[in-house]
Image 1 (tube, rainbow, N blue to C red):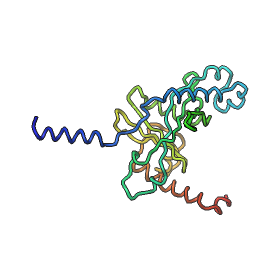
Image 2: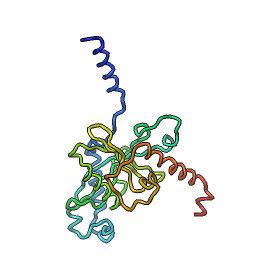
Image 3: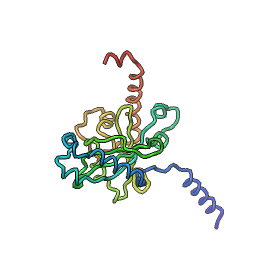
Image 4: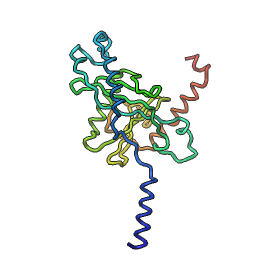
Length: 231
């Protein structure tokens, strides 16, 4: 083997070991996480709550009986202090962190009705949040457009300070694009958006540029007690 080829292989190996990889939702939730979600689904879908469950698309006891726990995905977020620090180059790899929460779709006859969310509480996976038919419909539309069966992987990233969200989409470990929520697309395009479209993508630069001023404004707003009292 030539010295040149040896050097080439060494450089390639170093790059492979040190280059940042896309963290995706390719890993399935553990049994503990999924079991906690099943407990949460049972707690939420109690028959005596049927009147309330109408708001989440459950029309009858049959809907409750036929409900199934669907896809689960980890919830990530962007740390605001890092987002607002423009002194160093930024990408999602450096900004995103896990929230230790997972959301699961609840489906009836294949249709997403609502969600159940579990979180790590005192070292144990526990149901912490229920409901949101709009979120269930949004994620169901995304999953149908970019199916795992075609090799697509993703990270769902929620920005709590705005609030808004985005999905980092990849395929085979290669970055594909950013799918913005309707609210983030409004921030990026500065025009009203009527409905969510999972086919629309924006680039990383535009996503971060739209998020920074909105996050900064909201943080500064809630630091001013007099302004909060006047609203």
